[in-house]
View 1: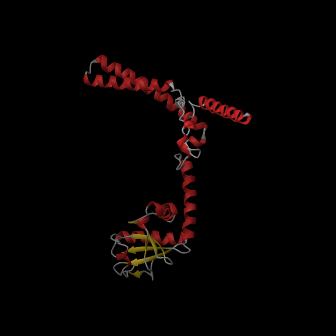
View 2: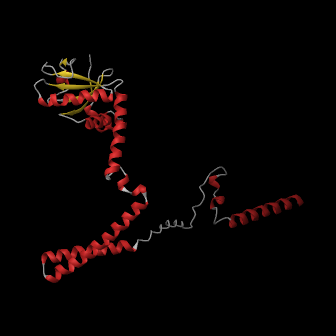
Length: 277
């Protein structure tokens, strides 16, 4: 009797404990009371009911302040154009005078700018255009040309080690006869050999070893004489220098330019390669 009473008491306590736990967790986990689910199952967690907080937009970058001079310039430019157009459409004395007065103001402002720019250039060698490239002063130009001539002569002499000049001519061409002494002197002064090639087979004074054309003139499309080409016999590379009568300074300048990497890049199609004898 005593054991039976004890078992009933334990059973009553268990039921009350289950009811308490079940009541406490009804809202959060109602599946505790579903016996059909068993103990081995998985359920996704309940979704978060809190609304997502939108990300704050990126802060706009502060714009650089616009220089007031730009606004002044635009207003002046617009006013000048409007006054001019009005004066053109209605050329009354008042309209034309108003436009001319504003134009004089603009010209004066530009003149002041030019004066300041010259002073800046005089004080800053890197910004002085008279010191860049070919000088404008007569004495400086003389020095510049002599220096340039010396450097180009050195370049041609270096080329003369493995290059020659092809001189195409005709024996009945007066321009060829006038050009031949220039090439003869050029050969002696700058150390590059001149190979004379006669298109018609005739002689040329100053070049007793002139060769008869063997078809190379046709291959190079020589349609006018005199003609000069820079050739490298070992590689067969041939580049035109010019047609007609050229001076010594022109020959130096052109040979120096066409033989440089920059000159080749300017007009790569001008250089050809032929099998030279």
